[in-house]
Length: 157
Length: 194
Image (tube, rainbow over all chains, first blue to last red; front, side):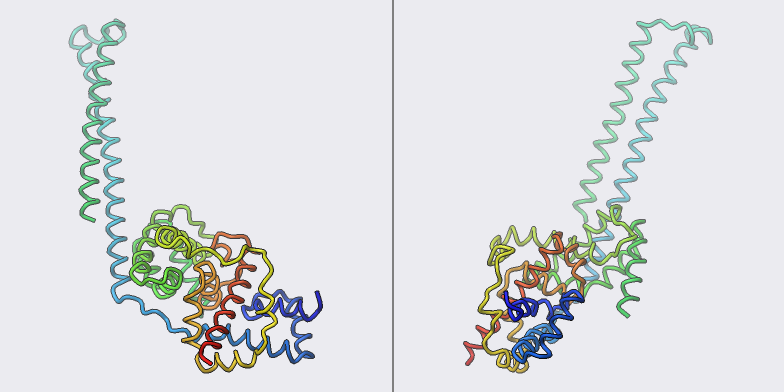
């Protein structure tokens, strides 16, 4: 590849201002002594400079406002979702607490404080299963309600 | 001035991580011209650019937690817009993304050894905006993108690579080919007019 060809290859990137300092130096030195390359460089620079004269597309008047509205709706849906998650966790905790408390109350009513430590495994298993089902049912109902609310919010946004 | 603008944007972007509505709205307003212009150049269609602009900000909100506030906000924002625009173009006009020749192929020699640089320069001086707009519109989207990011958005090569999600040498080569292709179309327009 001749020096002239190598310089020609650099010209497009020179118009974009993307030559590294060494390439820039080589190009400038060559163009100073070569009328053809200097003319070619000017033509490429004219293309680059042309972008400043390009007509700019007008931004729709309500673009920012419409975007603000969509973002506000998204933020409020997100806050509602976070609230649903907290409610769901509280309900699940509530279900477990009620179930376990009922077990303790039942044992104390039936046999006094001592009954709390005299565990009958068969009876406990029934209670454990019962309270687990109760807790999960509570959480399940809460999840269905939360999902319906979220769907409603999504429809509105 | 540009530095101040970017620094302010980066400050708002840092607040974005905490999902600060005012910071988000400030960024939407600040970038409406530049981001919309970029999307419009890339997809061509105004309604699509409008929708993509809004989708970009919804995606920004969605991914705010992943934004690294130590890095510049602008390339991160434009990269999100780029991904959405590319998906849109793939769905609507799959061919519009393709570059005419394989990356790395030699540049068209006949253009590099252009016969009359002076004529092109005179042509551009007279009809610069219209001629350039027409030639630009004919280019594949990937070429339009690198050109608009460099010449209209004034981004550095590293930033363009970050937006386009491509390695630096690929972007440099794409830029070179885009300019050669643009010049070829400008010369064709000039010949047709003569």
